[in-house]
Image (tube, rainbow, N blue to C red; front, side, top):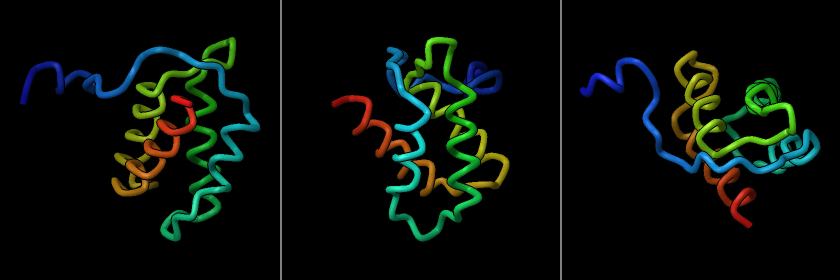
Length: 95
């Protein structure tokens, strides 16, 4: 384990920020077909991602990954759920 991994998440995704509206984030959550994620957890994911946006409603894939990893570490979503949402956000933000 590296010292960096003890003090913060590693950089796995792009830090380039893109504008994402609240409506877009919620649409992505509700169009997810994962049966393992309850409506409550979809709300938690949406809230966590929304909270990571900056003042211009911009967010990077790395910010999303960090928000989802925090939820995973809290036991609110599984690693599989996190990976599924990351795939969804990657597809949406890299269009």
